[in-house]
Image (cartoon, rainbow, N blue to C red):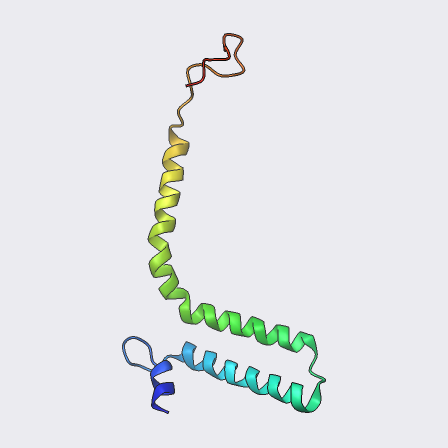
Length: 107
């Protein structure tokens, strides 16, 4: 039980609601799949789709802040680069649609 307690706690050591709900959702889904395959075989596909949606939401809640912590600066750098390129795009002196353009004018 000590391993599960460690999984359910966040980096500061306090019990994480997101991890607890995610773990409970996974255990419930595993129980439904086992019971469906061994006993009933009548659980509709829509129920599995709903469980998958709930799992995805809980996973985003659990991992979202950490993902944003690492991806946020990269996304900011990309958008900054795009903004700088839009502000001052460099236009070539001679366009290839110009009548003065020759075959060997490309640089």
